[in-house]
Length: 314
Image 1 (cartoon, rainbow, N blue to C red):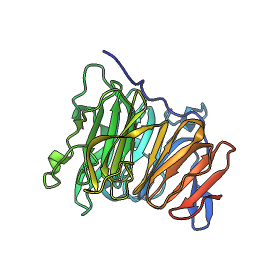
Image 2 (cartoon, rainbow, N blue to C red):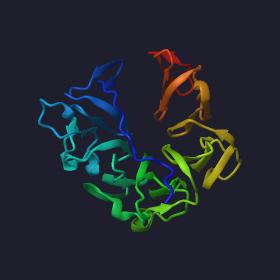
Image 3 (cartoon, rainbow, N blue to C red):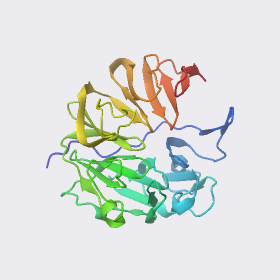
Image 4 (cartoon, helix red, strand yellow):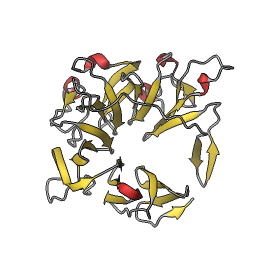
């Protein structure tokens, strides 16, 4: 068996979470050492390694969630404040990803955990249940595990150690890479492998998706009403199956609702989509929300941009 991707490795550099409220940013009131964080449309999840310290009684790694608790998205009851997802027990979580009303977690052993519910654009819900391992839902091959995850508003991409991409959830905008029928929830939620090989990276916007193979070739599919996939076409407003994005090669992709950033060598960033300009290079990292973007430069300056405006240092 040939493994294209290694098992996931958790970040090790910890820090404090700041929440932007109006014109100010305040530290989140939790006693934690956060090494990774994901902000979804209505809730957030963060990985805390403070439990690894000898003087605490916590297990090695904890996941904190906060925000909208509808449909069990937080995994710890109806309270919207920050709390630990205790149902994960001692799972050594390496990555988290948040959709509209659901959360996905990936362990260092390559196992997937999920909780909450898929919601379509009319708020019809397909429950996932309480936090639990969902590996049995997938037709994994012998010794195949998961290497990466990426969640959109109502769909998920999972990359395996063998370089396969599986997608599941709602797919009205073809963000799954295959057609499906929202009138049959059980069919929509069933994972399926895409016709892609040797994939090493995945990314997801609200309603569009990306995969990059071992040669650096980028494939995209899903909603394309603002050319957010990078694929120029007149009609329709969807890319129905994974399609190569020209001659583009990438190091990292960040996508939101109608805009996408592609980070290339030497910190160069290019963009696709609505009313967004590329930040000045060189850039270490860039992320995006519904109508805004944030970039971290090599000189450690942080830049902010509302869609349609110029980049500003914050």
